[in-house]
Amino acid sequence: MNNKGILIVVSGFSGAGKGTLMKELLTRYPDTYALSISATTRAPREGEVDGREYFFVSKDEFEKMIAKDKLIEYAKYVENYYGTPRDYVENKLEEGRDVILEIEIQGALNIKKLFPDTLLLFVTPPNAEELKRRLVGRGTETMDVIESRMNRACEEAQGMENYDYLIVNDSLDSCVEEMHAIIRGEHRRSSRNREFMQEIKEDLERMKQ
Amino acid sequence: MNNKGILIVVSGFSGAGKGTLMKELLTRYPDTYALSISATTRAPREGEVDGREYFFVSKDEFEKMIAKDKLIEYAKYVENYYGTPRDYVENKLEEGRDVILEIEIQGALNIKKLFPDTLLLFVTPPNAEELKRRLVGRGTETMDVIESRMNRACEEAQGMENYDYLIVNDSLDSCVEEMHAIIRGEHRRSSRNREFMQEIKEDLERMKQ
View 1 (tube, each protein chain N blue to C red):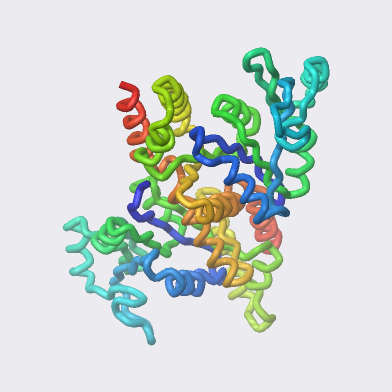
View 2 (tube, rainbow over the protein chains, first blue to last red; view 1 turned 90 degrees about the vertical axis):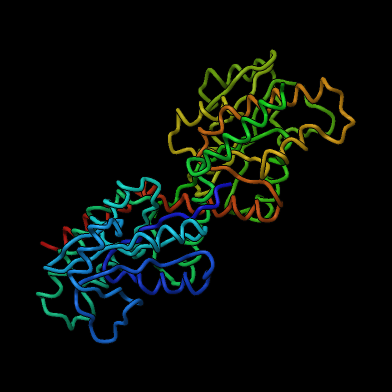
């Protein structure tokens, strides 16, 4: 069977718990997964560590990475660059690790266009009521905050259909196992194992002669 | 999320151990799966029990089932009819059980055409060498037997690409769990959860107003 890793993009509703989910998945299966870390030109926020949350680079360095084709995708938001370093991703895939990128919808669709084998996962609360609860909060938020969250969630929801699977985040434990089962299953997709099928066919033909 | 069952067709190389695999899957997860039993007009062989291996019916009864649209698919091999009774499959799917049909490739593709949501699984030994070993046997088979197995395997291999997943039967235990993981994952496919996504979108739009 195909032993190369799968490139996985995880997106989802804000507050759906993507970060916690990724962390738990990597803790439970450290040899199976690798988390890609983005490069950015924005300044580190308090508590952020270079090489953990992001690789913090200068604008000049970032533009050199672009010029040398060192990024598999990048985008500019509000004067800052964000991008996915190519070497790390390709090396880990070659080693057989599944590489996870946590990026938003537009970036996800760009990656899928460039790498059609990319697996797109969308993290969502178990139902609309729960999503509401998370958006509205505990009644301590201003109307402005709620409205802005709502608008963002509406935008995020628009791209859902383009994802391959929905990851339903009800309880962390079952959600992690479900995500792991989905990815494990994807390795057995026939479209990811064309060489294996070809080899079996050729061997059978050879034996007939 | 969508709680309806998934219609699953299992095919694969002869001698790949489909029967044992299905039996073990149903023993471990009796509330999750249901095995569809075909109706046939052929005579029961020794040890076969009506309602276990097949529903044994007369030619007349079978043709009445066809006329009354009581079969989701049927075929005639060597003067005998074989078919899948509709009621059992539809009732179990409605109850939320995943219904498994063990049929050969042509039947599988017919079912997929009629029910595009059908999940097609193909059971295969882990590699061509292992397949060879199973086909050639222990050196006690005649050349005729080996040749006929070989031809059959070549035919079976032709349709592999049309299946959604390959189920690699190396050890029974891991194979059963892998198959279960694949099916569990499929329930989370976004294409199987259009209503869920639509509902979340509509709820978000309503909240904005």
